[in-house]
Every structure is written in structure tokens, then in C-alpha cells.
Length: 117
Image 1: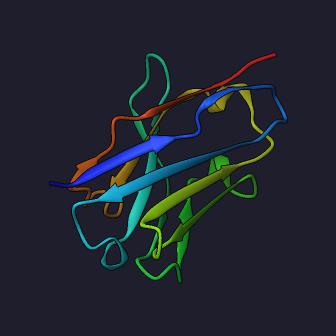
Image 2: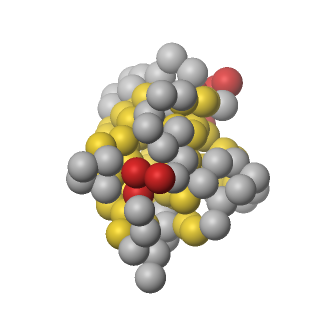
């Protein structure tokens, strides 16, 4: 069955960096677009970024443009989210998702990111 396992979350200071990873299994990873989404405390789910199956196109929500970078390694079946210049408002549970925003078919369990001094 499909499994998406996120890792790399934790506590970071404002201005700091974290790198999230999502290990995928149970499907042909290289054939699917992938996304990251997040849910902040008391708020709804927010799409963050997507990447095409071959990595040729990437998309970001305006609030993370220039600070976050999505990438993938199809040989390792792994999706990444490099997060730089972190802000307290980036605090959320981050989810890996199979598919593009609005067309997600599977979700990971999430990894917590907390940005605080």
C-alpha cells in the first residue's frame, strides 16, 4: 500500500533552516507530482508547494516564495522541502501528499515544525 513518511521537523529559531523529507513507497514515485501542505494550530490546511513528476516545474504559495525550495530524488523515492529564513508563522504540521493541490490521493502522517526563539 502507499506510504508517505515525513521526517526532519523540529524546533528552529526565527531565521533558521530545516529540511523536511518524505520517503515514499507502494507506488511508482517517479510518475506522480508531489506536494507539501501544512496546518497551523487552529487553522485550516494550507497548500505550500508542488513539484512535477520529473521535477521540471515547481509551485509555491506566495508566503514561502524565495524561502522554501521543493525538490525530489526519484532514484531514492524521496521528496524534500528545504525551508530557510523561517518565521514564527511557518509553525505548523507539515504533510507530504501524492498529487497536486486539489488532486491529492494520499497523505503522510505529518511532521511538526515549530519556529520560536
